[in-house]
Each structure stands twice: as C-alpha cells, then as structure tokens.
Image: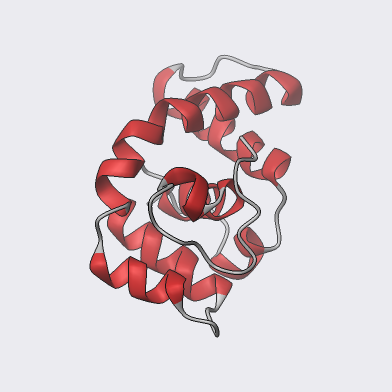
Length: 126
C-alpha cells in the first residue's frame, strides 16, 4: 500500500470523480514516472483503469463468502465493507483502499449481478 494513500475514513467520503483522480494519479506514479497530467486526464485514466479491473474484481469478489455475508447484512458499515474489499485486493494494486471504495460506489450488485447488494448500493456508476 502506498504511504500517501488516504485512510478509510477519508476514502469513504469521496465521490467517484475523486476516487478516479486518485486511481489515475497512482497509475501515473506506477507506470509513467514523473509524466505530468491534468486532473481531467488523471480522472479519465483512473476510470479507465477501474473498468479494466472489472473482470479481475469479479473473480476476486463475487464468490467470496465473507464479503457476501458482510454486504448482505442490513447493518452493513461502509468502512467495514471498504476494508474487507481492500484486504482482498491488496495483491492487485498498491492502492487497495481507493479501488475498494470505487467498487462500493460502482455497486456490488452491478459488479456481481447474481448476488443481492446492500441497501445503499446504487449500482452501475462507472
């Protein structure tokens, strides 16, 4: 995990554009070194990276029994869900909290259409 990654409380309060900006910034730091990019370019890159992650996210998350139980409860706690997803994604990305929060915004039921998502799951916001 990158030391500059915000904590779960900061992440949970971010909207999709803010999360995409962070994903894009992380992608630039990972792959392109010091290449500069505008915030709009970072947001577009972050959204593109998130969409590219979807097949692997489905493999990692949709059949996870622990996550199904956590997401399926009436009293789910957003931070717990984000932390649970981040733990499962830590091997995929240096910014698992950001990616996990992006999954929550995207919607578990959108990611895994055959599984019922939480009440706050808006679904489908790519």
